[in-house]
Length: 364
Image 1 (cartoon, rainbow, N blue to C red):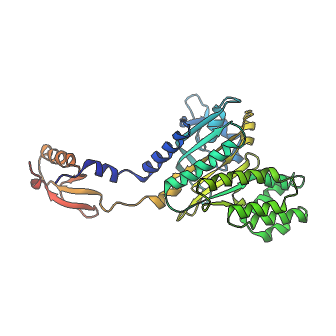
Image 2 (image 1 turned 90 degrees about the horizontal axis):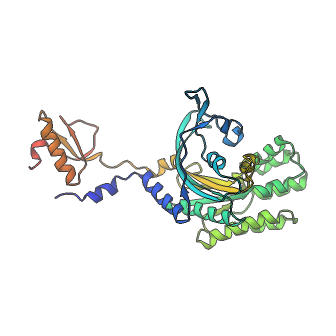
Image 3 (image 1 turned 120 degrees about the horizontal axis):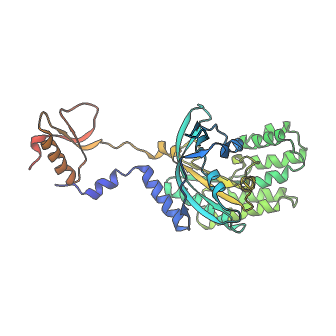
C-alpha cells in the first residue's frame, strides 16, 4: 500500500521550520513586515558600539580594502536604516555571528525576532510583551516570561551612580540576586534597602508590583505604573501564571531603558528569548523616536525541540550490481508512493531504515 505523501512531508518538516513559520505568521498578523539585511555590514557600524554587542566582531577586507563585518546583530541594522520620526514594525529571520562567552568560540546563531520603532508611549510595550508571550506559547511547553524596568533602577540610584563602575557593581549585584552583596555598594543605606527589595521580590507579578509600591516615595511611580500596565495586559491575555517581575535580567544602561524582559523554557538552561526598550541606542544613531523589540534564539531551543527520527529512511534499497537506470527507476517508483528511500549497493550497519528490500522486490 502506498504511503500518503502529505504524511511524509509533515513528518520530515524540521522543528526549526515549524517554529519559524508559526512565529512569522504570528508577527504578520499584527502588521509586521519582513526585514532582510545583507550578510556583510561595514565594520564601523559596530566598532562604535562594542559595549552594546558584548562580543567581538568577525571582520574581513572587501575588494576595495574596506573593512567589513559578519553581522553580529540585527537591531543595529534596523536602527540605522529607519528614518528619523518614522514608525516601523518589522520582523526578521536571520543568522548572526557571535562569540560564545564561555568558550570564546564564534558561532553562527539562527534567530527570529521583531522590532517596533516609534509609536505612542505605552502601546508598543504592551504589544511587544504580548507577542513575546505568544511566541513562547507557539514554541510549546512550560515557559516563564521575566520582566523588569531599567528606569526604576536608574531613578532609584540617581545621584549615587554617576561613576560607571559603581553602576556596573549595582547592576551586577541585582543580576546575581544575592542580597548580601549589596552591603559593599557605595550607596546610602536607604538605597541598599530598596535594592534588597528588587532582589527578593515575590514570584507573582501582582505581589511583586505591590511590594514595589510599598517602597515608592513618589519618584518610582512612572516605572512601577509601566510594569503594572504590561503585566496586567499579559494577565488579561491568560498569561498570569507564566509572568514574573524579575530584576536579574537588567540590560546595559548605556543602550537600554524602560522595560526589559527574557523568556525561559522548561528544560533549556539559558534564555530562549530576550528583549527590551532601546531608546538610548536610537538616540546614539541620531533617531529621536523610541524602539523596542526581542529575539528568539533558535539555537538554544535546538536541544529541547530537535528529536532524532526513529529511522533515517523508510526503505533501504539494496541494489547489488544492477544498472543505474534500473536503480533510478525503482527509487522513483518508491518515492512516488510516498516513501523515503536510500539506495546502496549493499546493506551496511549504522543506517536505520524502516525496512530493507532488494531491488528485485520492487514490483514493476
